Amino acid sequence: MYPRHIILTFLTAALLVFGSAGALLADDIEIGDTRDGVINTLGKPDGRAVLGDTEVLYFPRGQVDIKDGNVVRLDMISPAELDARRQSRLKAEQEQRGQAAEQQTQLMAQKNAQPEPAPTGPQLAQMSGEEQVAYWMNYQRKNPGANVSAQLRTARAQVAEDARKKAEIEQKIEEGMKYPPYKMSASKLRRYRRGRSKATMEMRREQLRKQYEQGPN
Image 1 (cartoon, rainbow, N blue to C red):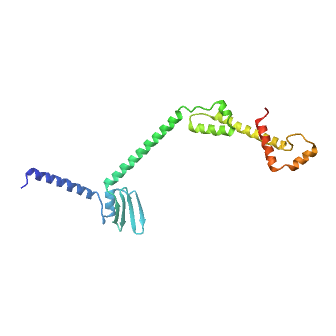
Image 2 (image 1 turned 60 degrees about the vertical axis):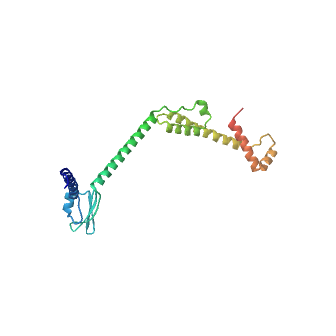
Image 3 (image 1 turned 30 degrees about the horizontal axis):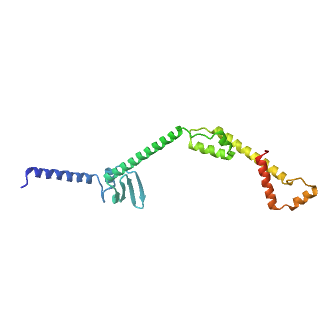
């Protein structure tokens, strides 16, 4: 004969186990249950579809196939698994919000940070207009809080001025190509123009370009 306290402990454990199992069964459904019984147990479905003679009900825990008013197929997860999935999704959403907030903080810090030093006048003078535009656009990307609209206007004006000077130089080169690098008579000039080779013309063109780009000494 077992002691009284051991028997009482066993009976208490049995009640807990079988009581919990009964609660789980009461909250679940099985093949053959009626449609009304499914809705009474699981609540109003999130959606439904009709496939031939079968009605499919969609719930947070899965789907139930109904035929002739009774359950013929189940694809469900347990309440515990549903809760675990919800917790996991909630945690992922919280992490995403935290990452978004951190990124926003970093962007604000970059915006309010002290911009990097801008180049001095002599440094800019060594750049072409196109190089200046590229520099200031890149500078603004790195320093969102910096206002370089005036510098960009100046650089774009320099691009236009560079283009004007280039066109002027090309015009002078074409004019200079009509004449030899030294004075000669009209007859010699005609022979000079007829006898110039392509290589000679290119060499002369480069000489004139360097001369006009360097300007007067």
